[in-house]
Image (tube, rainbow, N blue to C red; front, top):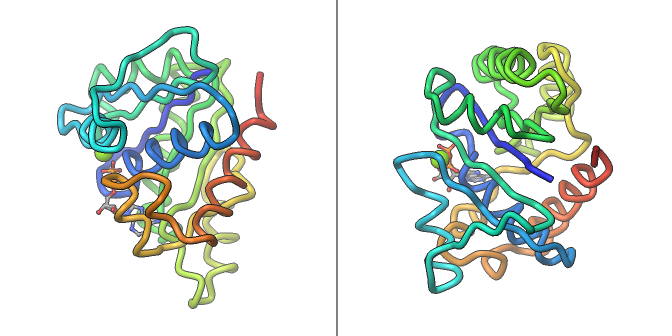
Length: 187
Ligand SMILES: Nc1ncnc2c1ncn2[C@@H]1O[C@H](COP(=O)(O)OP(=O)(O)O)[C@@H](O)[C@H]1O
Ligand SMILES: [Mg+2]
């Protein structure tokens, strides 16, 4: 199963989520590879740090995760979306980000009508009126949102360098829930 993470811009957490999903799918007993299409190379550097060697892409893996450039115009983004079973648009729940998330949703739907296009909210602040912000944001996008959001937590910032062991128990639980939600979409 191919999962492509995309967004119109950088900083929303595509690379972080690529690594978190890689780690969590492995925890769930799956074989996984991460394919980094972004020249910035965050997730490929991260894979090297975590595993001590460059990541090999194995087409027989259960799950392939495509991390993409922060740009819908980039050919790599379109290519990765075309090979996706699940196109996962990553966004914060703040209104300006959500408008861009909707553009990414429509982009993915246009490029790959057979993919399951979903939105995932990242960097969610649980202290605010947040339940409501996520709920309101979910109405602004033309695709279903995953029932699991990732909170804004410092430990996620360490995940790219340290992998799973950087995560506290709440973060682990969130990411595993995310994996369950994705596996339930399995085509
Ligand atoms: N849930 C989160 N909580 C806190 N910080 C986060 C979270 N997700 C991502 N970050 C941080 O946000 C920044 C951008 O993340 P990154 O994954 O590089 O985004 P992108 O790949 O979309 O450009 C990084 O510093 C990362 O550590
Ligand atoms: Mg990135």
